Image 1 (cartoon, rainbow, N blue to C red):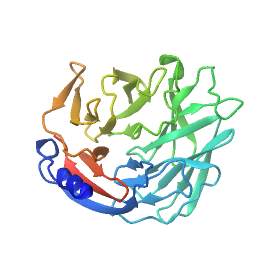
Image 2 (image 1 turned 90 degrees about the vertical axis):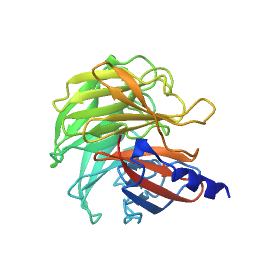
Image 3 (image 1 turned 90 degrees about the horizontal axis):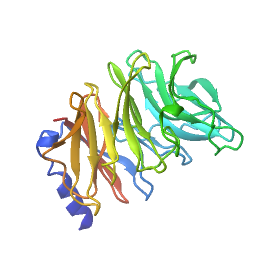
Length: 301
C-alpha cells in the first residue's frame, strides 16, 4: 500500500514539470538502502563494488571494473564515451571507455582525486575533486585547484578554482553521499555544487565560464533538508529541498540578475519523489524505496 501511494503521489506532478512526463522508465536498478547517484538518465552507485550502471532505457550496462581502486563517479559523452573516476590509496585517475565497455585509456591524476565528472559539448572532460597528501584521507593544506579539464586524448588542458577561495572545513570538491550533480557543463558555463564550510549543510552554487574564470557564486545554506540540484543545458539552475520535517517539497530557480532564488509554485508530490538530475533542458524526477527506481523526464518550467 505504501508503495502504491508513493507512485500515485509521483503521478501528481503539475505545472513545475509541465503536467505530464515527456518520458518515463522503470529501471532495473533498485534501491537497497544506499541511495544512488544520477548522471542525466544514468543511475549508478559510487564507492560500491562492483560498479553497477543503468542506462536511461532502464537496462544495466555491462559491468565495468575500474582499472584501479574504487569508482567515484561516471559521465557519459554524446558519442557514447563513458568516463569512470576512481581513487586508490594515495592516487586517483579516470578511465575512458568506448560505449562497448572496452577501455580506451586511463588518465592518471596523482594526488588529485576526481570525485565528480561532466563532459562538455567539445568532448572535453571536466572534473571536480580534492587533493590529498600523505594519508589518503588527509587533505592538502597547500593551495590547489579543485576543477580540472581533460582533452579527449587524456591530456590535462587546464586547472581552475583555487581551494583558498572557500572557508576552512570540508573540502569543496570532496566526497559526500548527500550530494550529486556537483559539476555540470552547459553550452557556455560550468556549474558547481560545492561544500563551503565546516559541515556538508554549508554549500554554494558556483559558476565558471568555459575558460575557467569565476563568474558567480551563491550560498545555498537556506536549502538544507534533502538538497538536490539540477543544471539544465539552457543554463537554468533548479534547487529542490524540503521542510525540516521532511515534508512539503519545494523547487526554486536562480534569478542571476537579482541574485535571488524564486520558488516555483508547483512541485512534485510524494515524500519518496526527488529531483534526480537534468538531461539537456529537461528535469528528471525519481522515486524509489527498496524496489525498482522509477524515472520521469519533464520539460522544466
